[in-house]
Every structure is written in structure tokens, then in C-alpha cells.
Image (cartoon, rainbow, N blue to C red; front, top):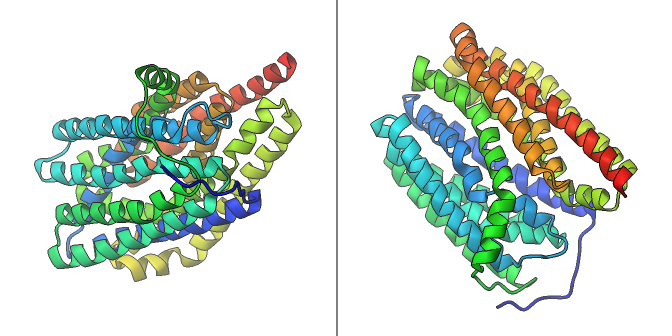
Length: 416
């Protein structure tokens, strides 16, 4: 039960700024963790294991989220309660960790299995409490989300630095990070959202089945989307070893800001895209889309300039000579990150337009391209081959989804 406070919504600008502030802080802290995992050990194996854990989690995290965040954030009619979304997310998260465990058992080396599991639990705790964030976003209160993301990042960084430096054990470190995130969730997220609405856990079988069926194309699509960057990396690890993957992941980490930056731009706007579509405001939808894509491209241009000027000295400072000698890998990574971020935008637009089946086809096309291209490209170009496979795979999906969005807008306008 919560004491709902009077309805107070932030402006679009305020929501974007709060979301960006919290997300940037969280991203910076997560990136510093990837730096520490290299700096706090004399070997690169820990960096490779950390990257492997993230890659495996990336494949199955959509099973936990089940597309419910986007669906809930655009549920302007409030067809389902926050408690129902939260309950269902707990169930899908349990299924997700079981999938991660089985996948890691058959695809990862023995020393990596438990590490992958514990990292998955750490991240799944955040996904469960993201149900609160989705409600906050629907109520246009992304200030709560911004503070939460910042706290998550800072607490994770502090606990990782302390635990890993003392134990040099990723397993123990991830367990302590999980406890820390639970503390943030219960001490901040839950009380802040309870001031907006009450939470009653539980969901009827009929509603659960309805939501699971409706979001199934979304979750399959997100699994495929998450696998596109993960599969080439795993193949690189199999062919060249964990140390090579560790180098590639260390170089790629700064460039990930492009994809993450894209989500900062479009995520707060998804509900506005949905409103334009429902109102048959094709002009407003297109104008908002153009501004969003230009914003993503702007991040890419700034990143290219930054890489040209700072790539080698920054990598040298953070990682040392070995990793800094691979700074040239960052240029094609900018292109692949731009394409991956834009595909994430287009996928969310198809959800907002209630066309999940088209989103599914687009993501499956990207996945098929990744499976076909990763072997020859990684074999021929090693680390750059991972980037080339990702760029071409995302390009394949974007061509299809872009065409679908255009056709969907035309047909919906005509039906109005």
C-alpha cells in the first residue's frame, strides 16, 4: 500500500535531463569497473571473464524483461497495475537465470560457469526493480529514475573496487554487488514509487497469459537483438582466447557510450511516439523521429572527434601499452555502435506502434546475418571482424525495420 501524492509531471526536457544525468553517471561507473577489472590484476583473463559474463547475460536478459518495460511505459490506459507487472517480471527473471545457467553449462569453460551465474543474478535484481522505473516513466517522473540509476552505478563501483581489490575473486565480488543493489532498491526505489501509487503483488492467470502472449514477439526479438553483438564476441573468445576478447572488450567499452547515449535520447520519448501514433499525428511522429536520429548521429560525430584526439593517450592511461596499441579498432566500432543504437530505436518504435511481429522479423534478420558473417569475418580480421559482423548485421535489420515503420505510418494514417 502506498500514499499516492498529487499528480505532478515533469516536462519532456526535465525528464530527458534527469534520465541522462542518471544514465551517464551509471555508465561512467560501469565503464570504470571494466577499467578496474584490468588494472587490479596482472592478467587479462579476469577482463575476458567479465566480458563473457556480460555477453551471456546479454543474450538472455530479454527473457527477464520480456519486453514488459516498453509495454508498461506506454500503457497510458493503465490496463495493468504496477503490482501485476512487478509480479510477472519476478517470474520471467527466474526463467532467465535458469536459461543462463543451462547455456553457460554447455558453452562456457568450467571456471566461468559460476561467475556467469552470479553476474546474471546481480543484473536481474535491477531488471526486477526496473518495473518501478517503467511506472515512474509512465507518470513522467524520470527524476526518480535518474537518482536511482546514479545510486546503482556509484554503489556498484565502490563495492566492486573494494571487494575485487581485496579478494581478486569475481564470484565473491558479484555476490556483494547484488546485496548492494538490493539495498538501493529497497531503501530508495520502493519508497519513492510508493509515494506515487500503491503496490499489490499478484497477477491473475488470465492477465499473465495475455501479457505473456502479447509480449512474446518482443522478447524473442530482444533475445535476437542481444545475441547479435554477443555471438561474434563469443566466437572471438573461442578462436583467440579470453585475453584477446579482454583486449577487444577494453577497447570497445568507451565506444559503447554511443549506443547507450542513443537510449538516453530515445527512451524518454517512446511514450510521446506512441501518443503521436495513436492520435494519427504522422507529421509529429516524423519530426520527432528526425530529431532523435540527428541526436544519435551527433553523438557519433562527437565520438569520432574524441577518438581521433584522445583514443591512444586515454587507453594508455587506463590500460597500459598492450591495450593502447589497439586504439585503431575504435573507428569502425563507432559505425557499428551507431547502427546498433539506431536499431534499438527502431525496435522500440515498432513496439510503440504495436507491431511486435515486424520487430521480431527485423531482429531475426540481424541475427541470421550475424551467424552467417561472424565465422568468415572473425577468421579473416580477428578483432575487427567482430565489429564488421555487427555493423553488417545491424544494417540488415535496419533496412527492414525502416521500411516497416514507413509503411505502418502510411497505413495507420489512411485507416484513421
